[in-house]
Image 1 (cartoon, rainbow, N blue to C red):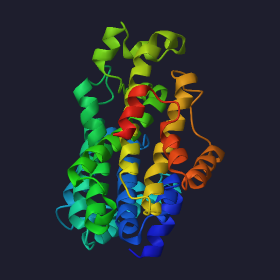
Image 2 (image 1 turned 180 degrees about the horizontal axis):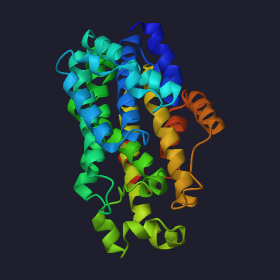
Image 3 (image 1 turned 30 degrees about the horizontal axis):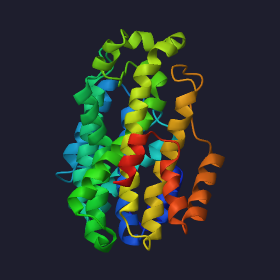
Length: 333
């Protein structure tokens, strides 16, 4: 697939991430853009209620197997006729060309490893839910790693491969921080989407945490139970903050001269932290009041990061803000 076509698809489907990509060096921009589109395509299949569950599982399994061969013909445009929106259908139909680009990429090994991890997490999600039984703590950790922590790990591998001078700490340490960073972003999504997920038979809040407060997934479907649910919910907000603090430590372990990579790492963290701030004081169980950072807020965060960048003190404060003492300590390690 031509670079211009990939860029067009990114403009349609990446939104905020497209801003991040544009600031990366070309050596990182192209493989990560390709990886994003492939992950977005499989995520579209995973979340599409228009496609029966059994078929979604079969499609993702076929997709995973295609990574080991040349079975591109399983992706036919007519397969999705009437089932997906025009934009989503276009993305799915582009998968064979995206896979072809992936397999001709010098970063093929890393990208296939990443996509296999993501689709494994997506498949585990589809086969685990819908269910009245919530995840266990170890299941939540594994899921967050597969679909998002793996992104931080491969991101670090690609930086080490193409821009090794930008890693100021040992690669293994940066991988650990990158994994936590990715898991933090996924946990933010889970917490923000809790009411909608519950109504689809998906409870990501671990069973152990719910039982400790005498709660069930059914209790979380009732907005009136928010005061009881807050203790559990805030625990995972704090966990998400700690993961994002590791991401901020990751960002600050990159050289100040690497402005593009630093800003690209910083923006998702700042948006995630702003989302957590809204979730701290906003409704968490009412599906009619979904918390979301507005586009104007995103622009303000981006401009503030650029404005504060010349001042190390002001810059570091951006990612620490009003977090807990524990999160601030983690960000400084």
